[in-house]
Length: 189
Image 1 (cartoon, rainbow, N blue to C red):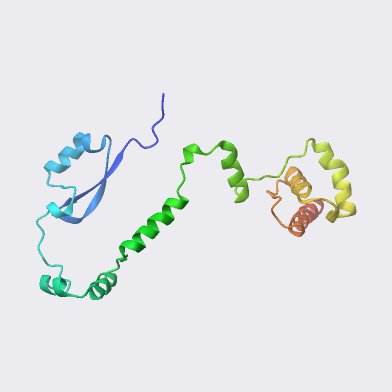
Image 2: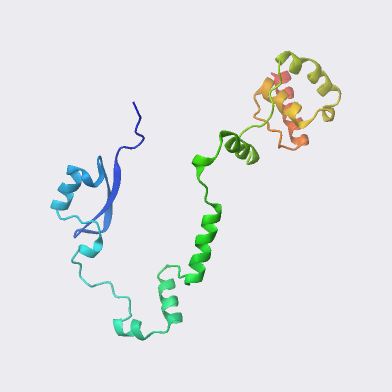
């Protein structure tokens, strides 16, 4: 059986008493009985269908807006909090968005894992084969000269023994300091 994550559909409706609108969740969206009942109670899907009083004065008459220079209209609309783009700017923004858009269904698991590792979201540290190897020669080498170990070995050692969540993309000095701190805490307990 297929699991539905969210079987309800969110629909924004407007009413004479709530002209700014409210969000409602209906089981079957616009086909539901609940939605139909809301429409019968006077709710509508756009505020344009409401008969609201014209009390929102912008300070600009229809005639002034018609005769205004485009630069003045842009300033006015911008003062209300809107962003005004020229057709060329809009096309450039659309092209930018299209260039970074990707169809995630076409990505392979390997590509997703590689991207997660590149961003540091997934630990790419190889796991050492046997804990005895970590507890043996590598720890002895660490005690003699910690800088003789590479980042992958340091991260694996710290993660294996102390669960420090170390990653190979960390600085070598950071890895050594975290392992040394964990060792000191272990011996002081």
